Image (cartoon, rainbow, N blue to C red; front, side, top):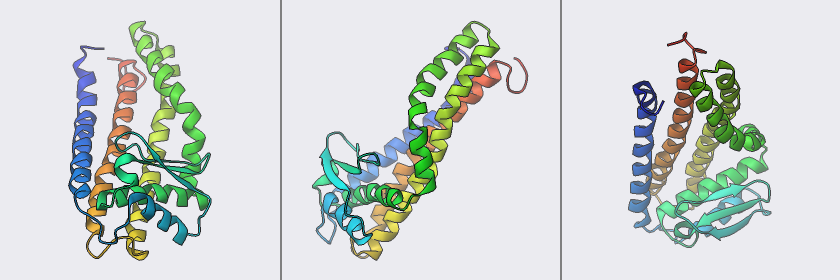
Length: 229
């Protein structure tokens, strides 16, 4: 499979999309990290204000290490912001922080797709590791059954990433709307927030596309889709 041209034909578009998304995300974040937000709010303050205005007071906002490692954990209601976001007074920092605050609002409002994504989390590690290896070993051993079992496990990864799309898009939509409604950014600055968040959203599209194409490749090669090669 390593030298199978069909594999690269399947994966190349998603890989290129991933590279493009990563480049756009870093480019826009870097650009708007240099533009101070007129309200003077740091990322942490912006997230706090967005949550306060939404009536949420039980979410802890903490700093975390890593570049764009920002995330919200619904298990402990902790919103972690990276070093370049937490204490930075820029349009990029405010956009990312408010996106994560959007996830906290989803959690507080019992947003369906977020609940479904959380339920799928335990299956993702098994699907991405064991599922992939079973599909690979199944092809090597010419075992359709092994590929089928692996594909079933790997399908959990695909499902997780597909459910992630509305979760991420909705969090960004909330952030883009509420930063204006709550006065977190000044006039015209919402365009910078949108560019940062739209580029980041593309990374999730690329991840979903990569998983889908990987699954389709194995199914096709095993003869489980479209007949045996």
